[in-house]
Length: 316
Image 1 (cartoon, helix red, strand yellow):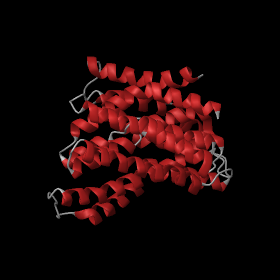
Image 2 (tube, rainbow, N blue to C red):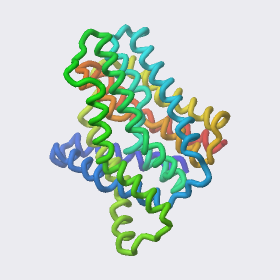
Image 3 (cartoon, rainbow, N blue to C red):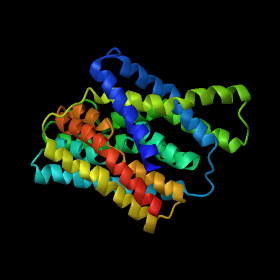
């Protein structure tokens, strides 16, 4: 069962990577696919998942409480390791913290959880995704300003306030956010979807996971191993082992959740580093190699680590 869940997911990533490697498709194809996935397919998948979800068996507050404090601890440890162990500056420390804690919940986590735990697990992921982006980007924005000041490289032309206001506007216009909110509204209305709309939504939502993973593989081809392997492996251990272990412990003992929700949060935490770590590194113009390595290595190693976590979860 575990092999049937993990291998198709990472196999599609591998196929996308291979297609980009041999240049079967144009270089810009990954951008077009990613745009389609983010603006149409995944928002409709989330809409369909939320419309069919039953939120009465668990509290979103407990779900967020089980996930985000462990994320913050992992982020802090990753930053500490980069600064104190490897002697990097504050900006590289922040990149390290993000690389250790920012899961690829949308392109990898959502398909994995839906395949493994069905609609109920997908509902938990929708609740996480509803706040994951805004929490991570808001925290990154504030900490970016602090890191720039600490390194004597502050640019006061914008500031955190301007960036956060822009974030708020972008969030409200985000197709993913709109899909989740629209799904909740329809869910609470109790209305059935019109047959034609239901068919069209299902057709587009059904290709979301496949195209998301394929596009992810093509995007990974742009990254590479560029030195900083040892720090990236250390951050990878935090991402793939320590963070999911902490989420597992909190959902088991501190914040009891419905079984599918708890399992979904552990798998979300066990996902490899998301590409946002690289985007933050490019914003700083430092740590690009570190974040690139973390993305590549954690994605490759997640084939094994996610399989292990799925096995552990089945025993509990």
